[in-house]
Length: 419
Ligand code: SF4
Picture 1 (cartoon, rainbow, N blue to C red):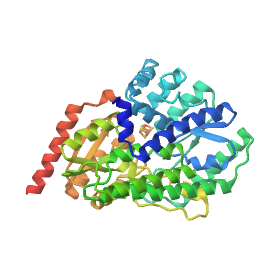
Picture 2: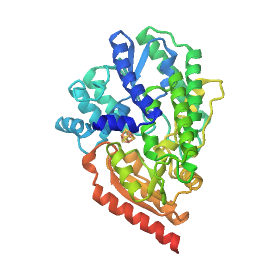
Picture 3: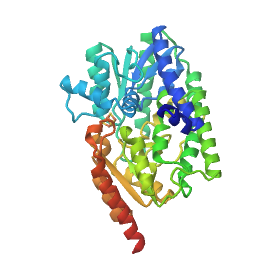
Picture 4: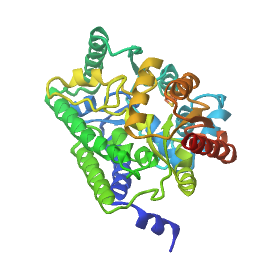
């Protein structure tokens, strides 16, 4: 049987639905842009629900497009184009892929790139590199760049910070109204936020099957299934997809179908997904009886800082909700908040060991990992290992040295059990 057909046969209904949803969304984005929609490029953390408050505003997410590019095996090719333009190999590989892809009109992109934007919207809550990256597009394309300034958080978000973020959302809405000639409708934004919140209930249910022994999911499943957050947030399709995913996973667990049936080691992942290694790494770990059952990267979605518990929309003010959840991703958290949320999830999932993936080109995620590792191992006694990866540049990954360290982690876990 041809490889493509074999893969298709192995896919779950949610897997097939995901592939179709992602493909259709990118094509729809190109089609709507060609028909005159107002196109915004946004950073991953910018609340897409705001754009659903307009009649004809569409958005693309360069980080998500870069992750897809890496997963499809074209990441290095696009990185090299940016490097030939003079960008350093040390820069974020998402940025290099995106800049490389834009340089020749998305020629080698799996989605024909993104349609040219009318406005760029970045934020600095994950990292300041992102703002500089969008500034490159601003200069090269001559497109306005709106920056949302999100205060870093060492403790739960302060009211004054939330108000400051909401003020900027209102400025962004006014900017789009002026540029596009369209009127913002708060009721539409409210419906979008309600859909997002409802969809996240199902997402959290899907993640909860990691609590099962053996786990009903792998973290690699959750990495792949993040895509709707970047392409369909706020839509009814978003809700339907995660409902299907949770129901199907529940059924598989009931039927005794587990991704690693002989699960001996339950591991936890800290950092962005290694997009170019998903299949190989999960398969090789499964052969060792190990499953990475959870990850900080996916657990933080739909939460607030310092907790991986679901934060529900109360049905009141959509801008307030969007501002309150601005700090949910890991990078803007100080050490205490990161430690607190990791400790809670490690206990909840009965984790045997933690894989700290030191990311060669995402410094904000990686810079505190040594301290974090010390905290988890010294204070809470959880064995751990530090490996070297890059989220999207396959040249910065060595399977041999990674698996030597992973096998050492499994030996440590065994030694701890025997003690
Ligand atoms: S947070 Fe990391 S992956 Fe995201 S833009 Fe910054 S360097 Fe790149």
